[in-house]
Image 1 (cartoon, protein in one colour):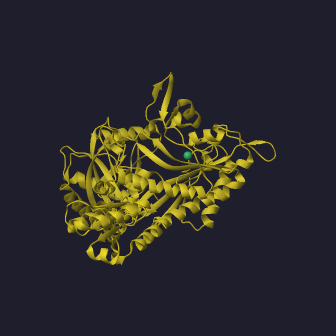
Image 2: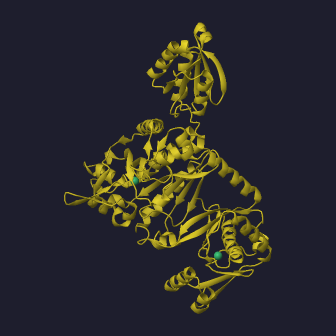
Image 3: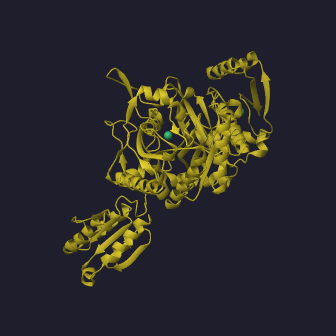
Length: 584
Ligand SMILES: [Zn+2]
Ligand SMILES: [Zn+2]
């Protein structure tokens, strides 16, 4: 997420307090727990004595609006343990938070607005009545949430609210979400036979149906061509590896909770691959390297497996298996600038192909005070690589925001944020500069002066994973994939059964050019066949009737442009191959 304006975050957080105040007036037995600001608004988790329903949200919202004008100030004061515990007597959640704050030796602060007081660190609107427009927020849904996100704890009720600076912004967001619902990748994925989940295969493990595989393979073809012309070399690596490798890479023990549990085998422990990097490092190390081998660019559509909590799985967006458009570039410090620039250019090329007009690179840097703890202790390399990354971003006119103290342990990081055609934000990919792990793996090359040096490594995955990227594309196109990417590219429909033989011939000439055409020779009526093709969102329909045959032509219709008219088969083939080659 992009850093949002701090005033808006303060408003959203203030509204969470207002929500708790309104809930306590209407449901005096409710126990408030925590209530932060989030991306599009705020939420608050409560323990209710009796379950509440979506219909209660209207009343709560009304009460919030009634209370708001009396919230003319929000004042904090520091209190001691006794006063804090008295204020929340009977609320075990707040008491637990108080004990925790005391254990961390942080100050205990209570904030009051109107007649409502809450335990809080601060960060509110100073004068909520004046700063928050009464029509700029609304409560929108209920959800269950475990206390502290832990399934072993009690389940609470979460009330979500939306909040923006103005009513217009709120309305625009609500409309976007309505459109997003229509374009929901799970819904369209079913309608278009793109993917499926099966209980026997397991949650979070997508099965790509033929239509989904066609899209994935077009994306891989694009990646292969682009990477080939960028002088990448393709490699292939196993889906599992021994624990010793992940100990070396640092995945064990630090990221063990994101990996599948190990398999005991031949007296050793094997893990499913959670990242491709260590495998690629091993390929680098497999043969001695000299400066003449650099930059070395190793690419693979690598399959990784991650442990995600079952409650967090979500369609193709949160899965347990990911096919990643991965590559690792090993280079010298002198080569870094050019390499990083080329990676950025690749992103821009892809954005153009997919019609992604709005994007931002979120550039995370280190903090010098935390070298040796949160960040690897290489002050010069941090400065050098961050300067280089910044320079490339500025030079190439790429919109970016810089965020301090969010880099990876081993180097600066760039998250690529894009907006779909309806304006919803997605994080598709991450680029990382890595100057620590190559050392851990003992990666070396012989420099021109005969000394041994460690290369820098750039991790990049512009097309992210098939799962997330195709999920994004389904929403972005609303299922109306451009010709080159459409699972079925052309529908061939004879007007009458007597036209079947001619239709079959056209079908075969398209298939000979590897164009994914579908010939409907069923007994269904002509009108029904046309409707089916439209519902399947097929970019082109070729209609063949008696008149077409007599004229030596076919009739072409486009999903997006409507009737095109009569063309010869040669003209149609030329048009299709040009569009497909141009990835349109
Ligand atoms: Zn607060
Ligand atoms: Zn990597």
